[in-house]
Length: 351
Image 1 (cartoon, rainbow, N blue to C red):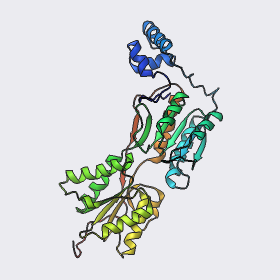
Image 2: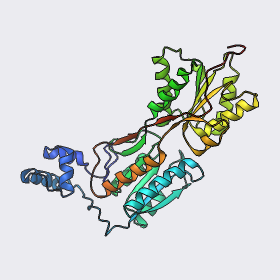
Image 3: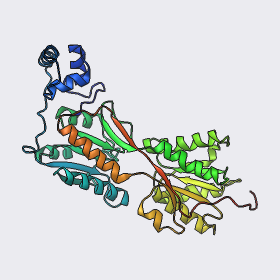
Image 4: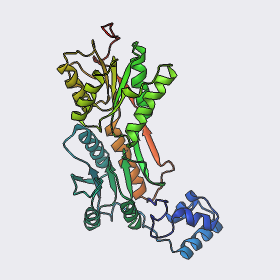
């Protein structure tokens, strides 16, 4: 069960309020709500009285024999290999526990790209027992609706920092940014640019922060003009790379914060008759199939997309069974996959 604890987001008292009223910890209150036996009788009495006094509405413990056996996976689109990797991870983990997955993609959206309320009503109608949101941006009212109806949900790589109490799974993006930049530094590059995603998106800002941290640790001057945002759009990344090449002192290497954007970067370099990696070293992020298809094959930071999705499904099942994960944010490690798109910088005119 998920209960967010931001102001104005719940229809009744949160478990934290109940715990405070009873003078116990939130995990102890959760044990009482979920019928656990390892609670002292006097403690159980205090928590039960607080639950009744405050009007806390309990969600029945999830029973796979009585529940629909359905969970929803909400994705932005099924057209990308990114979403395909997430779907693969969710399906495999759901199969292991005997659940079926309903996939919703390309939902009707309101301003800001958020799912419309009507979809949430359909969720109740089809009897889904929980939801996984992938790359989603929910409004406060939608979080409150999910909370009010006691629908367990987990965010996979949320766009923005979710409210307190919301369970999410992501990758170690900051460390990935550090690793990518350190790799280029180790080859002798100092003029390293970054083509980032959305400025406000969690994963993008973390990758740029890792890039900056690696430069600072190496004592390399950070150049504001070397930081370009492309919104994870291939065509915009193409324009940003051209802008970098037009600088009086262009970079010799670029860290591109997604493999899809790296396609646009490669195209811009080819238009200028610049080769990878002789004229420009390129590092991507994600390790999608596209990274291997590029020529030369793209050195990139692998984030474990299928593993992230499977972890989220397993967390969701625990929540459907009444458990409340102690850690609200789970981060899986990233690692550099070296291929052929990086090399030491070579001396050239203007270098």
